[in-house]
Image (cartoon, rainbow, N blue to C red):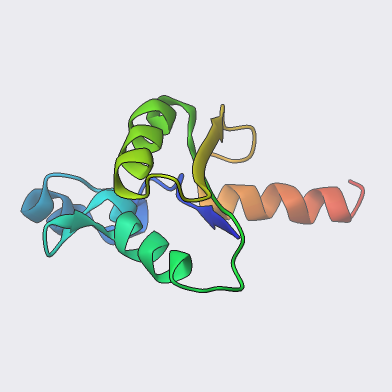
Length: 104
């Protein structure tokens, strides 16, 4: 299972960031834990999911990896990350893919 978690939360709006201290939805707290942790918990509970790979931005890799290791010790949960090579936003990434498919 691959969970994308590299978004910037730009579609969330500024009000959300002011209330939670972050504009990145996956790291906003819900009942004391980041939303990302709640999501991973749901998939860890499924027998048919052998491994969970959380894709994050390179600059978040170390601390997200540590957070996952503490929360899910001995489980097949890991974070991966690299520099962003697609668009700077979801719409730009989609646009680039559309252009590539058209061979322009």
